[in-house]
Image (cartoon, rainbow, N blue to C red; front, top):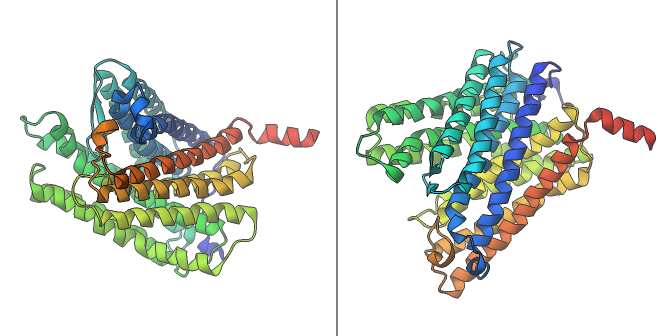
Length: 462
């Protein structure tokens, strides 16, 4: 592979490396917390098992924290890893302050469901618990993320040679930082425009609607960067040049700048405001991801992989492509408020998560934490995506029979064999997926607790 097509970043050996490790710890621990809450969620919705769970009323609170940890904290903290590696050398106090605030906010979010009178509100993109403790945690995390984005933009690394793979990768990471900044602007814009008469569910639904959609483009840009990185690590020869890859990434960034036009054209309470953001994400996201996805699929069909390192990258890459594609197709089937909606975002978000997991495996040895079980790391994306495929399939099946979203236990109305089978498949897939998530945590935590120096000493004794 020519140097011009090297889609990878070198790990700096200064404070930026320590920052990346700090964000890595936060992202992994967020997934650990989300996994605990996801197990509670799956059990509370599985037929027959849900009838004997004594804490069934805990379902919505667990769902709030699960979503916030597994999507918001995990994805944005992993963005912190990549932005830390991508930035120019500079004063690190702002970056460390961002990490500290984000960690503190995440801990408070995890604690918040266990206090009294924490009323859950299932607002899209950022569900909340109506309790001062939760809001303080969310605000601290938001402040930490804001400082992270500000630091990333102040010390934004120059793209370098524009027509190189590394230049395209840096452009994608810079574009993701700009997208994150636009999402924060949209959150503030929505708050300023919010009518005084709106409270509760309606307030938070509109508050997070615009910025939440823009944040999806941040996740998508990070995923596209990871696809390029994984393709390079898998030894693939993409049938596109770095120049074309840069154009694809630019399209994803350009979609973000449509959001201010929507705010200027319609107030946040207008139906057009809501629908335009939906269409922006549906069609803009497809326009940004489909060309690169097709290029990667073609290259995957041409090359089967040779070394374990290549199979490691290939496993995460192809599973990410598959789940993200399934989630996108399910999105076009949505009709009404049923469990087809969580089927859509489970597929899409897990597609993003698998790409981040794959790059995490690639980065660990470069950060000084070699993988201790390569075979487990190769199989983990397969188990995780297989469980999620069953989970999504069960939700789509059940959605076709009218099972409503964001309910549990008897409220699901599982009064027919079709509904029971669909939600049963959902529950089984969720458990398999939880095993896949656990395998990721085992691989990463085993590497993190035994750094490179300790690993070499052990090998020397052997």
